[in-house]
Image (cartoon, rainbow, N blue to C red):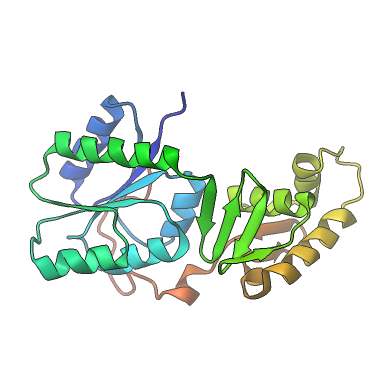
Length: 241
């Protein structure tokens, strides 16, 4: 059985390491993250299933806003701030649950298990920004509107999203999506990319051309939301290690 993957966004190293060790011992794969820059890339690359976000860190509500803008991954918020207004604001942005410090690890674990149990009962819908994938029925929705894709177009877009931020050669795409030998005609890839861009409308810019290589699926996070830690000094912690 593949372990569920949990991202811990926490600046306090002692608490972060405590959570990583505890969740690891409970059978989960935990990643640590102390800053918000490129957070979407980290979430996509590590195929995160759930996020624990400490709302006591700098600009935490902006980080939360960024996460919920692009994904529907559940977020458990933890905080020493027990003000009702603050908790309500977190729920308004989209946290799944809110836990006040000091943490009771058994309660946290129970909430995590409850969330994963709920997720298993949900339809197989994957969300990214304004794009929703119904992977079971191979249907794509953009801003809630069903987009008519061929099975090959759906597979191509899903492949690009699954390899978020990675520059993929036309040969790789042709081999993995079409199951062709690399000697096949790579113009097929270009033609399907153009068709996808036309159908994605405003989200077409997510499919980027990589000069002399191929394509990648990625958003420029700073264009949508300002750099979360702009003008702040590095705190000496790390992203997702």
